[in-house]
Length: 556
Ligand SMILES: [Zn+2]
Image (cartoon, rainbow, N blue to C red; front, top):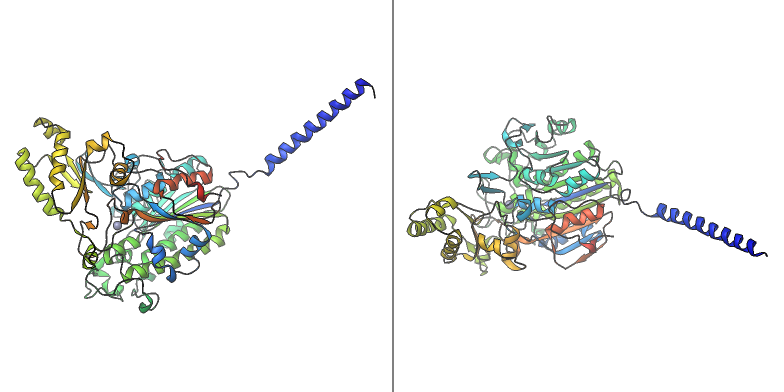
């Protein structure tokens, strides 16, 4: 072979292998999963209001195969999942799940709070610049305008050029409005009273869509106006306390707190359709309406990811009323399990098994009824805020010559009048410290922190870490009070929440479906981790204030 021929051959070989390689590269690109096309058709975010982690384990044997057990057995269970801020309540809870951050950043510092700028109490989702839609009352005057950062649902809307639909559904307005975010297609909530309709705000639309009108005109809600008895024989409810006891509330007109609760008879005295909120039927109505939304909006109908945010509010009302150890709570969770199973099997049918992703968490947990704990020799009790305020005012009068320096006491925080303090020539930091020291001497208060400390320090663990994550520099107060563990400011019946203590922070996080591994972890995960985990799954931007981190263990 001539030298020139050899060079030519080598040249041809090179070209062939180059073009072969190029083709291979193209093939490689073609066979790699397209992150958009492999996103789930639908994400369903489920928040169970006031769900403690141990409701999964306590009632495990009562659950069927298609609800909680399906999510745990086939999905991923984060067993050590916590709120990392206080106050642990519904508004901040829903905002934090969906924004991937805490009240320090997203600004929802309570359900209600004292607004320092306008000198008035404000509601987290209230907005009187919008009109009600679907009702003549003010129940629809809501918007997410007080939430300062974007939600995972907002980021989905932006990422998909608003082709991905976002719908929020809950009995409580704030449980629908905050998860749906600023750029939602819609959020709907349940108005009690005489009508029992699902309503919305002109923030989203001018008139209800036909499927909502049809739902409201049907007898779907009316069907739950029936006696509430236990779903299974009550003697099988071994995971809760006695049926009638002193730790439970009674509906107006009831002589006993035991089953059955005759709703038709209690109807007029207990807010008519509003009564359904405090029964498991409020959750069933929510599931019914969420499935109507799935159908009516054709959610998950194409390859562009949609988002359905559902919040089950009735678990919270039942817990507040009857306490976390009641037969009523056990029955409510057994029934919720069935509603969940119904939602999941409908998703299988309409969207397709393996084509959707679900997460389930809570907006806060709750403490057992302190009166019951006390009777069981466990440290617990009640904080009398009225008495504390009276005693504290005496201190203010003595120390500053006026009680006007205190503008408000709410969410365990003091809000001071900075102008009056300045006029009295009193240093703010000093005033905060003096007041904190005074309060620490009161019964039932175990720790105090000042606003100044929240500004100056960077806490990384324990109660101060949790308080700081809930501390918004523009919106929060001057002195922060932490009640004794086991102590609440509440009635002697029923449970509540709101503290930085572990019984209020420990909640479930279950993830299931497309892109989710099967397994569990006992490593600590936190509420703000949920939104970036879903962002990572979908391959979309993180919400604008994100401070959490994606939970790598759960993603395929
Ligand atoms: Zn609550």
